[in-house]
Image (cartoon, rainbow, N blue to C red; front, side):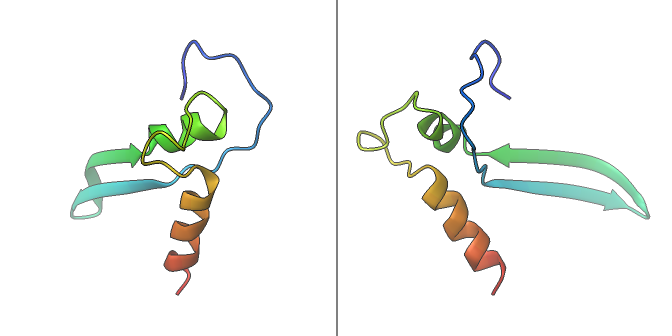
Amino acid sequence: MLPGIPPTGRKVAVPHVVVMKFEGDKITRQHINWDQGCVLAQIGLLDPKKLPVTGAPQAEALLKKSKR
């Protein structure tokens, strides 16, 4: 997920979206999108105060909305 970056031991929540296309009962395409800025902020490589990322709170907010 983060090649070349050594483990930090921090817990990371990753907001992501999977879009799949089906033809009949078979998957023909799959696209996985995730917020890399959010991940980098959570492991301490980006300062969330200087960028439009919020880290774990962003992932938690999306999880809460999906449970409604």
